[in-house]
Amino acid sequence: MYKLKVLVVDDHPMVLEGMQAMLSQIDFVLVTGLARNAYEAMELLKADMPDVVITDINMPEISGIELATKIKKEYPVIKIIAMSTFNERSYISQMIAQGASGYLLKSASKEEIEEALQTASSNKLYMSLSLELSRKEQQDITNRPTLTSREKEILILIAEGYTNPQIAEQLFVSPYTVDSHRKNLLTKFAVNNTAGLIKLAVKYGMV
Amino acid sequence: MYKLKVLVVDDHPMVLEGMQAMLSQIDFVLVTGLARNAYEAMELLKADMPDVVITDINMPEISGIELATKIKKEYPVIKIIAMSTFNERSYISQMIAQGASGYLLKSASKEEIEEALQTASSNKLYMSLSLELSRKEQQDITNRPTLTSREKEILILIAEGYTNPQIAEQLFVSPYTVDSHRKNLLTKFAVNNTAGLIKLAVKYGMV
DNA sequence: GGAAAAATCCCCCTAAAGAGGGATTGACCA
DNA sequence: TGGTCAATCCCTCTTTAGGGGGATTTTTCC
Image 1 (tube, each protein chain N blue to C red):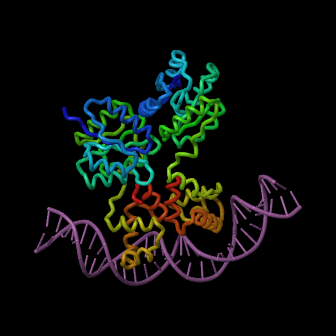
Image 2 (image 1 turned 60 degrees about the vertical axis):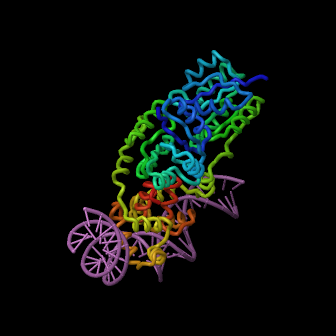
Image 3 (image 1 turned 45 degrees about the horizontal axis):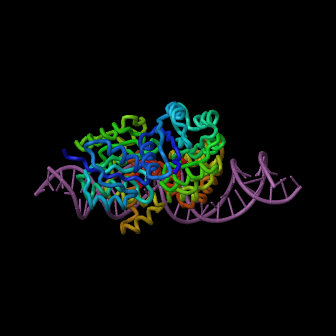
């Protein structure tokens, strides 16, 4: 029987130990490693090439979202399951956007974890049962605009507090150009000023 | 060698398993039971009479605080160590008031748990408060400015996308007043425009 | 090779924001 | 009872942002 190789990433030792204990009770799973941060995770990835990475979203230094981005870029075949407490649900959409195949709450039972792994490894999307996305959160996912690479770039600079002329200088383009992109951003986000723009951008994890 | 009998109470299976795994690595500890809620805990208490109960604060139905009250009433000799995520720190004082002998964060390491148990069983008070805050949280706490109630109010309206005149109208004050508050906000957040302001405000959870 | 999408640039005009000042009132408090 | 702080209000001036146009040049992709 082929065992699913799983790597667990979390900065809390207790979660790491708990996950390992629960995963070891699932017969088709083999825990290949435990990482306390994204750096360790990337090391262990290279060494073991797991099938699935279960990662906490909220970690210091490098978040689970950033980690997911890196993993998907270097090893697109690896499935990623995001994990968080119920207090941090706003990040789910970001994880999904980064290619996560599932979402687990830390309150998950052994059965839920098992199901998440099975679902993810069969190329489907698993969502923690106890997880009812609020209407607003649903909207967040569906309404998040698609930005061009230039727009993303400019959005980040706006969020950093740079003005149009400053951004123009940095990007070696005309202030008019920056202004055009900025207007497009406002349109795409359906807001009418910078405050609304940045609020959404932060919530969507784009800055 | 006498082993310290420990009962763990938490509604999250993962924490329960993780705690057990970590406690089993401590040689002077014997885990006598795992309970998923206060009812189970009271049952197991009767059967095993542990020396220490490690309990989550935030549990459905009966909270850790209520559980502590009951335990202290019926078995005053049992030591109680409260446990929570860093999001729930406001309950600490209540736990202490109910006779808890220690306080652990769920991000605690094996060493911290060990120390908490030793401290508690020697009738002293263990606190893991300041220890394990992440860098980001530390920063958030130290850099997060203190706002007056009016400033908070106006900050939220700015984030909603309202302009100064619109805010002034809503709050029945002069646009000059709103402008003053807005300037104070920029100063307090140490940014120089709305983009930077809102970015931080969202990150600090103020909007 | 040609259409679509992205990126670039330009103009006008008005509203809003930001950087400087400063002043007054009332509340709380040591 | 004097000091601090919050909240209010006022003024000037410059820069930025936002709403409305439109146009051209690169990429990208089928």
